[in-house]
Image (tube, rainbow, N blue to C red):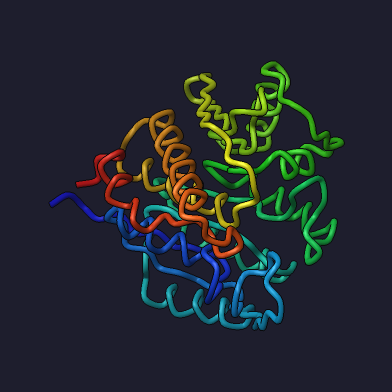
Length: 283
């Protein structure tokens, strides 16, 4: 049996509504990856349109995780950084990266801070600046188009993509530090939606698009990022991992739409995990 990769996944956890760690854990586990979660906060459900949400900040707990794991001498093949709720949490993650990232540790940062042209309500301008610093330490970042605009400190425009502009954005995002960049929410025509990638090591751009399903489906960014990391850690090419991640995400959205379930509850990805496993050749 090949060596099992180990990933530290720093993200929030929602009890109901598929997103964040409730997607990251099963996707990476199905791909044969040992996944060690560090929850940044616990929510009774995600906050996208579901009323009466209870939540608990876990900043103090994050410190405890870091201290014990350091004492245990743990090592990680990859570190996945997702939603962070405060400047203090960003500072803890910076310390975590300094402590646990070795020369072969693959660092993925999903700068989950904005969408639809605006920062999340919990995010401040200072936090956005510090998130950009986190991105500089990453091997791969996975921003959406709004987050890309904030990272590059430029205005956000909701319009069809132009290939030259997308490739310029990808190069400039890579100039912040990461060797690989994936930009999500890319569309050139209304019927297709997906992602664009850039690998600085090869100088190649790649695109993965799929037929668009109308509606707003929560957790799809987490599904794409975790699927992408799963492919990379299973040693398929960057372009192949991106295509597999977009295909899996698109199929999950279509399956949810065809089932007629409430899109606020997240996408029905669980029954499709065997297909994803086959796509990335993990077994």
